[in-house]
Image 1 (cartoon, rainbow, N blue to C red):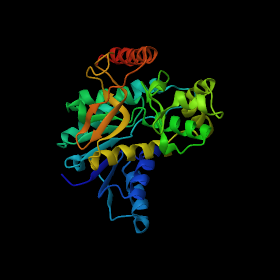
Image 2: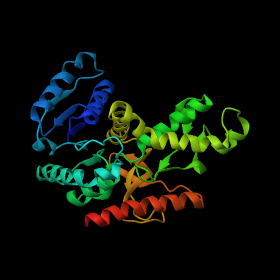
Image 3: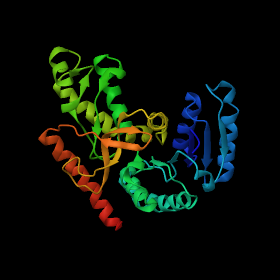
Image 4: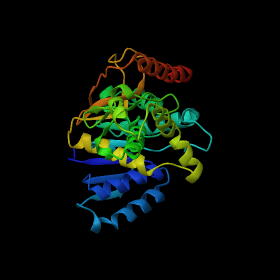
Length: 314
């Protein structure tokens, strides 16, 4: 394998926000862009190459095809139909599942033996599709999951209490969608539980927790209503996951992971859970001690995802 070769499939807004962030941060040595519209991929690669004089490192960037996936460390799938105003992520299911199957067949036929990272929505279900279509072990098929939702949560909390977002440690768990929830029982500011912080600070109270959750839950719908799509933040989230893999960081991130029984919920689903990420993909899922209410919410979310998978007869 190349020491750091990433293939992006889909050069839309999410794919190119991710690519632009990779170049800005000098994350990889080799970056391949694949799109059904080959001219689009060529044009995007030209544009990125023209910025290499300002990049932190030398990079090889080019438009390619599925054959370029053979020796890639990571194939990141952002191809798919965009979410429309008023549409939930699950409405995208049937349209994007067929696209996903076609993409994975092309990648695997090239002899790919690396890690899949899926960003296309509905990401939990489509990551499951990639698992089944690729035949790879579940640790090497992951989705972006609730990484973006968690970033939104950390931002909202930090803004309210005027503490750096870097010192806010909290997770959104469950479906990357309407049944997601905040794991308040494991939320910390620095090393202090947020429930204790509320008792000591006038900037935040218990009623604010529901407000924060609703702002996070509805953020995508609001952004889509105002600018038609979300892409910058998810691009950055994908870079964070990429760096954790390529640098073998053993970093804990809330991604769409396969539940193999760590949590006492439906096992055969991908769902947003905190996991240790390294060169092997998911090293292991982190088991948090959830409250009864949180476990009920996680189970409900898993059942919703499983219901959609059953409808697809996967």
